[in-house]
Image 1 (cartoon, rainbow, N blue to C red):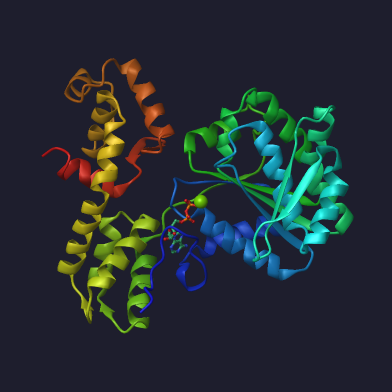
Image 2: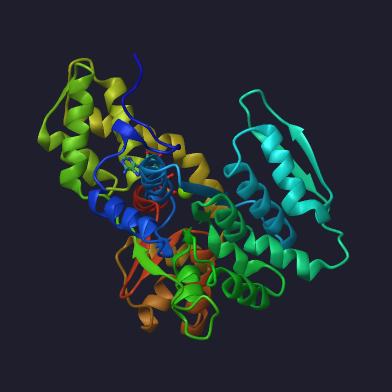
Length: 377
Ligand SMILES: Nc1ncnc2c1ncn2[C@@H]1O[C@H](COP(=O)(O)OP(=O)(O)O)[C@@H](O)[C@H]1O
Ligand SMILES: [Mg+2]
């Protein structure tokens, strides 16, 4: 039997729960061509939410187009331009010939070459970037969304994932200035920029010194509430002929602190172990197996940290929230209080902690549990 829970890929249709308010909010922004900045730690559901709103938006009218760009593997400005152009051309053209002719039309100076890469109909486009008048042509690429939207009479939403990556580019500030200068002039296009490194994103968009200051509507995506999870888990069990009580479903959500990815994963592990009725013992057993499964990964993560970074994680796991007292600094081997700032930055960059005003959390609830129970043994 197919399992009723999904993790590690986009949650859609019946796998997508709640987020009614957020979906509506994002859709309203798409419809009004309002720029959006969407922020949450990894695996909380940004991609799933954007996919959901995009699907509804695209179905509403032939005029509506959504382009998805992921900067995860775009480590340089050149790669950014290439990916940006490629995704725009692919998303705004349906057939290969159209794709080729559009590429030639819009990107001729980049000497594009083409491959119909797979039978499912996706196209590969690559082009050289050793063009003479670099600046001029890169400017054209940044204006591609608006050029295409205008010529084809469309509205285009450009969604860019892991947007904070641009902070690591060489000469990032100038690059940001250039993006902003172009994009803010686009009349028929809106941008939905999202990312998982909260402070880097806040820095980009909320610091008045930075080019992207006040670029768009900022949404801080929250976890999904436990009531919604309980309802969802009960339904998914019922649909597959199994039973779980409200209390036990609540236990699942609670054990992984409502973390969307883990709620689905723990639900699945529990579901597999359930013959007819899922009990609390089954959930506990499933959770232990999840920890065991991840233990190697966690050991590897910890091996890559300095002693003071490990000490800091232990302090956070213990619920410490102030890192200024000598006692705390000594107990967790944090060095000086000036050092704490560097530790926080490094751990946030590694996406191990989430820093919110007045609160620091270990991003991964299972890692937190593991630090508390296993790591110290
Ligand atoms: N709305 C949702 N309903 C149910 N599960 C969800 C939802 N959003 C996310 N998830 C779960 O979390 C996982 C990660 O979601 P994803 O959208 O990839 O997060 P992000 O883009 O923030 O890293 C999904 O594979 C799914 O298991
Ligand atoms: Mg994602």
